[in-house]
Length: 170
Image (cartoon, rainbow, N blue to C red):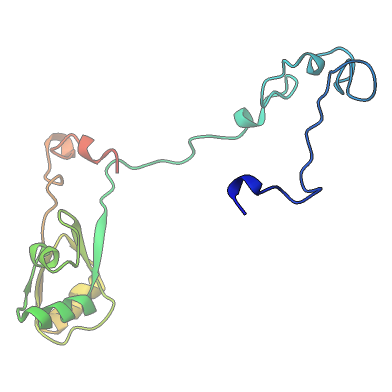
């Protein structure tokens, strides 16, 4: 059997109805469209509802608000810090160390969260930390240093020093 021998099963396909081929039989003359009127003349646009406000215009659009000054953090939990400190054999952890070991993406702002436990002393530097994470690290004898965000330095009138445009399309 070759490709040109292939045919659909008998009765599985049906040719389409060819309308408007003369007045004899069904589908002739007005071709099932009725007599006269807008729809008989094939001029109705898609989505047209006879003058009623169409659905695509009735549905509300652009709801909500996208904050251009939102800061996106990458979360790092305590158990991840404890594992990393064991792995590298150092108690000093900062965003550069986290990037070097593939814990966070390069250029990301790091926030320490309190899932897990820390039993060793850690000196952590991050852009943010939850209160529970800070207390857990300090209870183990470590310290947390918060890094100021580059665009949070106060300009005049209490606004950020940068224009903020680089954060518009997040």
